[in-house]
Length: 431
Image (cartoon, rainbow, N blue to C red; front, side, top):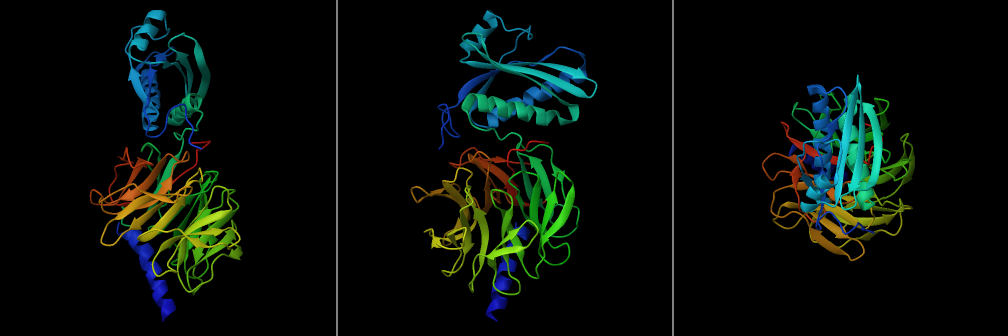
């Protein structure tokens, strides 16, 4: 009877999720003072028609939005009559606005391709800091703009940009639980599955080429893989019972997940073909929600072995299990890309589900949300400066992004239905 009770508990747990709802910058950070950067109107040099001007405006507005969302910059704009050159008088006008670096570009349209020549100028000296020519299909114009934004961020800060990343999540607007994907800035929303079944808990592979998730497509909660490059879906793990909360190892060669196999839900390590490598836990309790450290040598997971769900660390060989001290019911931990923090959900007595960050070097816990209903399933941005999560703060469950100090909260996308369990991709090499 006890086994049945635990199985019912974890099944209802996942049911409720889906149905209820080294930081070194050039004096910049996710929350520190931002630097003023100028963006001149992009200049069309060929095919001066409304179509070409529209593409130039799209490129410019996307780049400007990326630079604002990264929270490194204040974007300053300045209208001028001749946009093809930057003379001393124009640079002086930018300097008077407090701008030290100026982004300017020319745009050429050739049938189905677009050519963007972009450069960064030192406003004080007028010298070119960086310049590059990009050529892309017009159909991938937003991805082109995101590439440019990430290069600007890298040149300016030395850090990777996240503009080419995407977010996958679950939405029930069709009355079923289907997977959707969207750019990190909320554009290009696209539906991935059309199963008319329950699809839950998606997670990205480290190379960004595939997404694993649990699906009831064949009436059992099996673990599937959706390869976005090959547009191919396959079953990875289909053991009778739970095949849930899958998480890739940093090298992408192994997956941690919870299997019940008719018994207690424990953690297992499998290869990408679904073959069991090792049973990681073996007890009469529920172990779930594993997340690898960036080194691949440790695992954070949830276990109720102490009587209620808590955070536990474990070595990759299954040993050295120890609890991280917290003061409530914990869930859905995720290890930061930098390796020094763990974000998770916790509910204290008679309170809401809030997001917290556990700082590993200091053992301090930082609260990110407070009294805003259910805030759950956080995952990190590729640069470790933001988290994406689901929240019912305005009624239905929706997807939000915020900085790691809890500031700058923004809704990811407007859509009907409720949205759950987001997962942030790595920086993607292809659109």
